[in-house]
Image 1 (cartoon, rainbow, N blue to C red):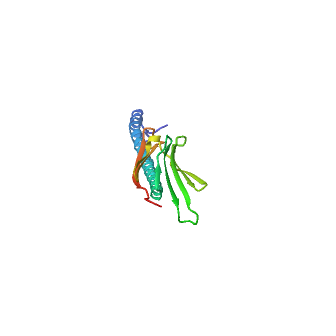
Image 2: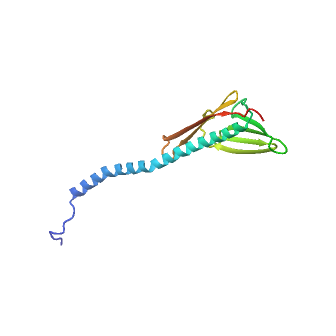
Image 3: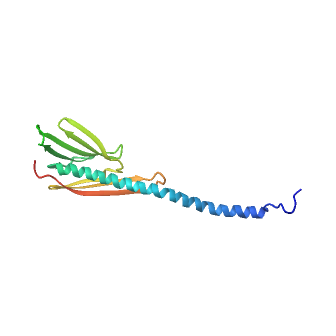
Amino acid sequence: MISQDQRGFTLAETITALAILGLVLPVVFSVFYLLMSIPIHSERGLETSLEAGQAVEMVSRDGRSAVSFSTPTAAPDYGTFSWTDYTRAVPIGYSVRYYSDSGSSALVRQETAGSSVFTRHVARNIASYGDVSFVPGGSVVSVTVKSTIISPVSASSVVTKEASTLVTLRSGP
């Protein structure tokens, strides 16, 4: 038998507590979700900035070494920098071709040094061919790289960063 001192919660108190909990929990989970997604979004923004910046820096280095830039005849090529290295006993001709690899959404750098060919992905988050541009103007080439990442947390969360530079070609050997 239950004595008068051993009382539990009434049905009304239990239902009221559950209703309040039902109102508070979605707000708590929403705030928690947002706090968890902010670092991911920031990390993606940093990743896209670094990638675009590194790609532009690599193109700049090639452009500063080059004495010429040839424009492509068609996509997926962006253009080719060319120069000869006379610092060795036997001069070596270099050409660095930049092109789009739509299969991997990447900007690709293909370096030919003499008879050797080296290929590497310079930027991996290139959404379309138009996100990279090489615009020659005499001895200067304007280069723009746009890197885009779609957040895995939310498809509507897209981070796009752009880097650009003017590359002045070397005037002689």
